[in-house]
Length: 231
Image (cartoon, rainbow, N blue to C red):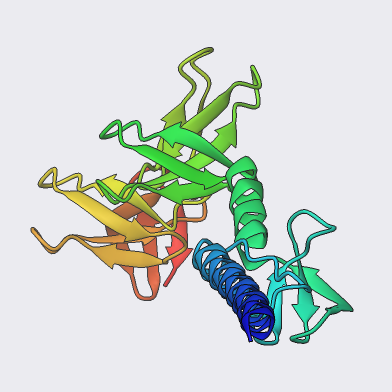
């Protein structure tokens, strides 16, 4: 009886120890699984998720950071990595931004000193602060790079004092010879009238806008060169 009781107690003790070991192993596996799941969630939230193939709680299928290629993404099918890859949107955006930055230059508006970034190949730009349009030109005499206000009828080089008319202007300033009013006149028109004194100016064959000195039917005489023109 005593021997049976000792054997029974020993069997019960071994059984309990085995159950405890199994429970400890289960707790350990559950803890590892929980830690792996938390690491996966943390990595995904930071945008650098690399799904582990051995994780019991592997992330769902999707695009993840490629573990073999920096700046790329690889398809994860939920069990293993696929063969299809593509560029990471974050990296692509950063590269595009850097390329765009390198293709622009910073200029200072001559009117309000506002700093503006413009394309390196731009021939003109508009200042967002004062709304003045500036044109990039090169002085034909000394080859100096210049920025000229688009509204000017003529410009001068600050380096060599070269002076010429603005080839891009569509209007020019004309001062009325009677009332000294400054008029904006469209280039190429045959005639125009001063809005202040109503004097009419015609373009002569000599290229000058002049008021009519004398009339003879459909013919008029230029005030500047005295030649006759047909209306």
